[in-house]
Image (tube, rainbow, N blue to C red; front, top):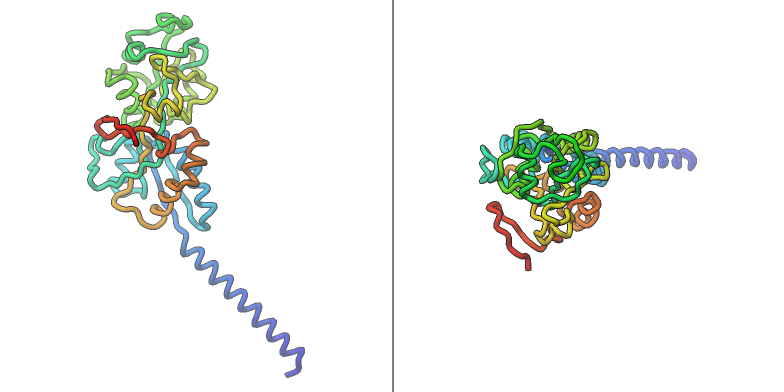
Length: 292
């Protein structure tokens, strides 16, 4: 065999080896892939979606399917084992019909909840008593509170919403609310309030953009700083529940969201508060302790 032919054979073997190596790498990458579905809180949804996109970009072949539906849906779905992660704005122990002893709580952030009104109403602050009388139907026109002469339109989140539960517990102090239209999505609530004269509702800080008016309560401004000290008391942990200890993609994704990288970037950029920023802790019974 002459030198030219030997060289040709060598090049052919190298090429075949390269293709085999590429195939091996491709199989390895695929074997590390997979997908999970996470369902629940729409207040937490923007963070999970953004983190999921980044995580998928960093992990070839992995897909994070993120769906809303509210905290009640997230907790019931994870309890039934229908999804890998159930997202909630409330403790599982607070949700009727949920057997929390089987669920593992991963607190990935804190979110403030704020009342929002249509910008044409002309008000920027209300007292707790005024909010209670707005939502129970005692007040029917904003002029009764010093605002414009326009009827009050209440927009509630649906039953089972963690945002609603948090707002009723901490802003309305458990006061009963009037039956009114209900929406499953925080984004839809904001849209309705922004375009409906006299409308009022409540959303996570991350949804309260310039299209609506944030409302202070008892003169306290709805800011992240006030949440960290519990001066603004209408807030909740953002929980990501698993049914038992997480494994595989779910475990990796939760570790990713809890990592300093995401906690110091996406969490804060999207209007949430990192757990490490909190100066207080609050348990399922509402007891607050100072973090030393």
